[in-house]
Image 1 (cartoon, rainbow, N blue to C red):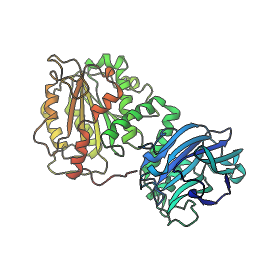
Image 2: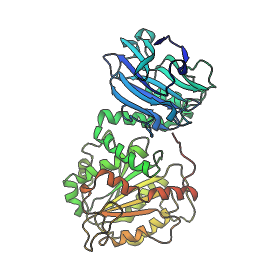
Image 3: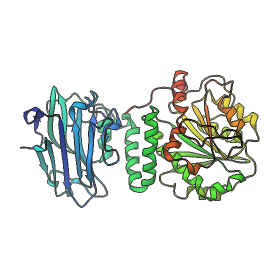
Image 4: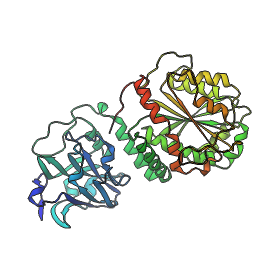
Length: 457
């Protein structure tokens, strides 16, 4: 086994003919330390966040990189170099430290590369190699005509955020010494979504593991729909008419709101969703977030007591004004970089059908998709949509009409109904929410409603 010194580089082929290797990283410290493997392209840029392997994402799409075991200060990876896509040319192993501690406080650290169960390369370091850094790049495995390995030992004062910015920015042409380069553009030009997204997942893991579990389930449905890297603003519009009383009292609306918030953490980089209410009137009720979701609905109903009457149109007017500054008549496309996904929940028919129809038609020229869900038992039997048998028709004739409404620039609405939202599994719900939206996204781009391609990671 060869022991590398800091900054040394070697060809892996000098030590093994195998392409299936294992990498074991271990740091000793009383602080919480996270180990991550970043799969980067030839420019050392994270082009696909599915190749960032850490405690919350323990495998790449085809299992080419797997995190077999992890705990604070430790990460054990299995890597099939031959299975990596051509877009992944660099594997960078990092450590980030939480709290007020810095890397100078670690007792010791090591990285071990194995092939066929035998150790072939190692690199050791200690806190004396660092000072106030919050993150370090320990080592790299990179492809330059052949696969090579290098010990790095470079620190970052800014921790994980600094690493993400470095990997998200443009880098200088690689020199023979494979050390990380300084971003050649200002941090403000670095795509911000990735940094926020990863930091949000870390926050959920620490503060809201239930939301993180829901978020992972939403991710599965989004990947099936081809929207794993999609960015959108998510809104939840809730019926607060008197007939909804039992649903609010039972906690089912709170649970449902949490499921939509989890979708928002996948779509929206700030991890929030906008809340709108409607009964006799419409209300812009602020944001639901990872920070305030606990007990949110109970607090909401105290501030906005249930009302008599149900007016969809008033809520739609408020939503359109919120996002586009106007709810007026439109007959030409209105473009935006980030579309809006509105989850619209009700248990009864509206009193303003003509106004509702008008808003749906005019909003079809806007980057806004309406997903209607009606709650209640149908009187005319059931209607199945694919795998899910608790989807009904009958009592919600008007909502069905909106689903298939004529006179629109683009089909901008979908509808399903359920007898009880608490009886839908998380996976089934997220699949239902993605039945028509992916097609709308494609058509909205083609028809100029989504202004330009969004960031892809």
